[in-house]
Length: 75
Image 1 (cartoon, helix red, strand yellow):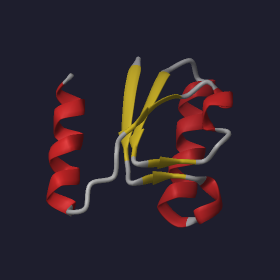
Image 2 (cartoon, rainbow, N blue to C red):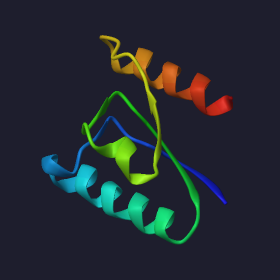
Image 3 (cartoon, rainbow, N blue to C red):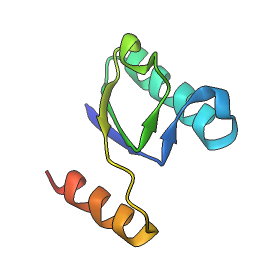
Image 4 (cartoon, one colour):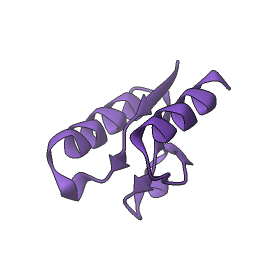
């Protein structure tokens, strides 16, 4: 199954949401799912773990960020 996860930063060193999502993505990938993560910032080793990344440029406003994510997710 192709699964997309969307968050602001994908970095296990940050803790909280970032660390939980890191563990969840790796668990899904280990079960054979095609995991894609959409974020504005990534830990440098993410692509070494079988997870497809979609990096977005960080706009200034939160509304611009939401619009950018919506456009990517529609694709």
